[in-house]
Image (cartoon, rainbow, N blue to C red; front, side, top):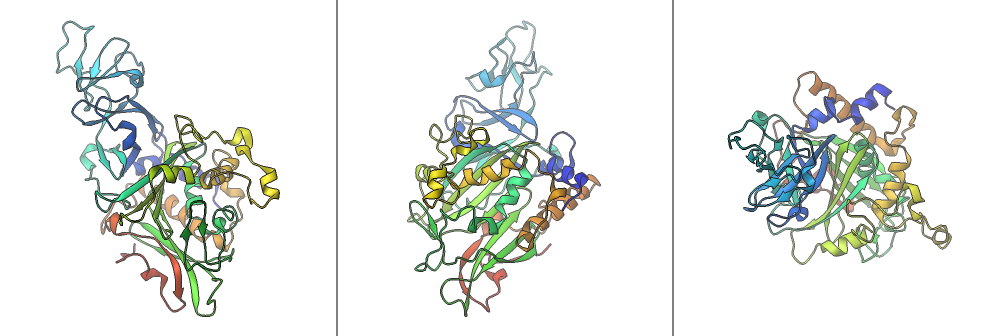
Length: 426
C-alpha cells in the first residue's frame, strides 16, 4: 500500500509535479506519425503532461509541435491553415513556422519577421511510427534513440491508440500485471494442450498453461526492471516451466510477452493527471511474420469509426458499461466485454480517475506492481531533490536490444538469460 502523499507523487504529472518534470527528461510520443502523414495535412490536437498542443507537418515535410493557443489572442491553432511552410491562425492570419517563429503578421503593418512574438514550440522527431517531442530544457536534450519496436526501418509495425479516462500509473500497473491475464483475458487467451508457447490465431492467443497463480521473480535494471511470471505448464510439468518475462522501461513503456507471430509493447502516456493515451504496438523484424495495421486494430476492437471515435475515445465506455453482454457471459465468454484493451480499461477506469492505493491489499502475484510503485515514487523524490531522472543515466542499453520472452523452458534455465542479449543492473 502507498500513503496518500506517495500516491499523489506517483500520479500527478501536471505543472511542477516531480513525476511530470521527470518525464520531460525523456522524448515523449505526442501522436502517431500516420496522423500527420502528408505535408500541409490537417493539424492534429494533442495533449501531454497537462499541456494542449497542435501537431503539423509543413510544406517541406518538417514536423512542428506548438502550444495550441495562438500567442496573439489565444485562439486555437488546431483550426488553422497549414500552408506554405507554416500554420496560419484563422482569427487574424498570423502564421507560425515549426520553430514557433511568427513569419507573417498581416494585421500588423510594421511587424518584421524578426518579431519577438513566438509560439511555444517543441523539438520534434519521427521514429517507430510516432512523432516524439522533447519537453525538457533544450540544453539537456539528448538524441532520440529508436524505440524497442523499430530495430530497423523495415520492421513491420502496427499500432493501436486508445484513450483511457484515468491516471497513467494505474494503466501501467495493468501492463505489468501478468496474473490478471489468466482471468480477465481468459476467453482471448485460453489454455490449450497442443501448443508449446503463446500461439496467435485470428481470434485468440492460445497458451500452454492453465495455471492462474504465477510465481513472480524480479530484477532491477538500468532502464527500470524486468520480471518473470513462472507458471506450471499443461505438459511436461515435472521438467519444464512456462515462463513469461516483462520489461518496464522507465518512465512509461512496457515490453510484454510476445506470441509466435509478433512482439508486443505498450506505452502508457499521461495526457494529464486523469487521462492517459494507451498505445499498443505489435511488430516483427521477419517480413513473413507480424500483423497488419488493419488486422491488429480489428483484433483489439480498436478501429476508428467502429470501436473508437475520431479522438480515439471508446464507444464502449464506462457510461454505457462497456456494452457488457451478460448473455454472452452465460454462453462462456468470461467478461462479456469485446476486445482485450477494453476489458482492461473497464477495470482501470472503474477504479476512479486516480485510485486510492492506501486501500489496496496486494498479494504475491502483485510483486511487479509493488516494485513499480516503490521504484517510481523513489525516482520522483530523487529527481525533486536534484538527482537524475530514472532511465536517463549511464550505463544505457539501447532499447532495440531489449526483448521480452515467453515459452516452455527446462526448470534449470535461469529466466534472466532469456530474451535479452545482455543485462546491466541498476
